[in-house]
Image (cartoon, rainbow, N blue to C red; front, side, top):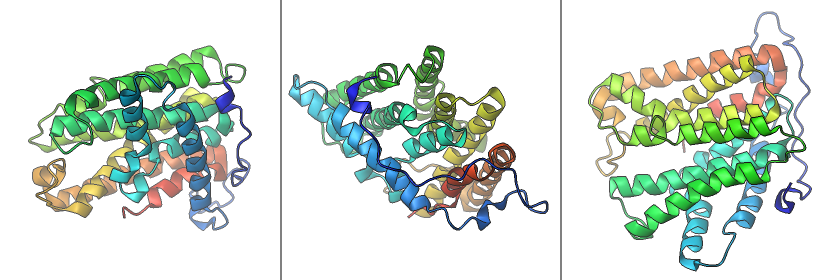
Length: 309
């Protein structure tokens, strides 16, 4: 394992041990679990992610312009996102790993990879949308290419192979590659939607796939079985779409935001219905996970309680 990931971590807020539901009348009991501080939990993850990102980006000084662009694109990613998007994907990755009893440190490289790949994706989106960018288009293309390569290297190079099997690392690399490829984020960005069916397809690829990938990769690193991975996959997809839907409802018909298309296609009423539908779908998967892991599902549930500020 590389030294940059061998530094003893800060002590994270402890999660309760797995336990069966204690309430026969309400399987989903975590709403009444007030002792868990999600803010402290997520802050501890974000702090670790930031520490590692500043170490791994950039790895070389030359060419300086490219590596500076890579570093700035990742570390400044969240300046253009709302507060609840701040390292959202890494938090999902770590929470999914710890859900199944995995060690947070084994999933840190994958969580960093998701943040780096997300930054690469944002760069390509900015150019595709012809919005303002700090770097010229040529540098944006090169930066995005380099960042995505770096994200895969991060998983392959820094995941501790004494704790995680080679096959699992290969699966994680494959998940990330598919997520951001032509049937994932890139495919979603390429669409010009004109009806609800096309809109849902786009939302799944462009937004749902990233959260799905984060949840599944965290579960893989933590040692989840196929049944759990299936639930994490469905949960992640639903949460990713739900977040985007509520975000677009918040901004409404903002003519300055050309990237917001949902309300123009389906209208406000249907958009609100879609938000509820995807949230309920995520909750159904959490109920399944609760039956197996008890209160360890709390962090994943808290992600559904976040308000889009």
